[in-house]
Length: 187
Image (cartoon, rainbow, N blue to C red):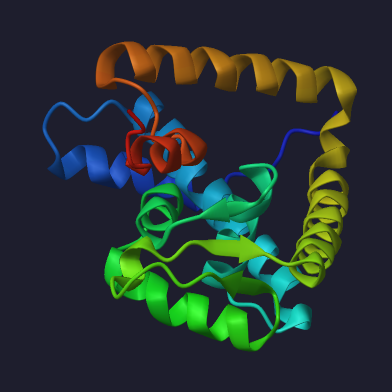
């Protein structure tokens, strides 16, 4: 991207915020605001890719956690809640919806539905791969105007930002790690 972009809402908003918030660093807030906005764009894009398959963003996130955990693509509702950063109370109804659609199966494990694992079916794997492939294509298309050099620079800067944040705030809430940590300990 060789052209300098025009000023955006962040450029006009941050100086206004600085007038009323003592100690606000406009450079930091400009980065934070743009990261939030970029995240929202990407979340919307993911939702748009999932919708044609009849999936909500939350449904898609469950399929993603089940897929990325690897064979046998199985997690308990407690693990899914941790791995999707969702309240446990919402997981059961989502799993029921996905089961009715034939995208997961649930094995009976006593009376406690929180311990009844959900397993991705072959159809669920196909749907997930279809959505994630389209999502990757659209992300590539959306970001491609940056060019390979700028993209590499941005990736490096974001990696450095993640390192700085992890140093000051602790480990990032990685979804796979959270799901693993929620797994019952085997002795």
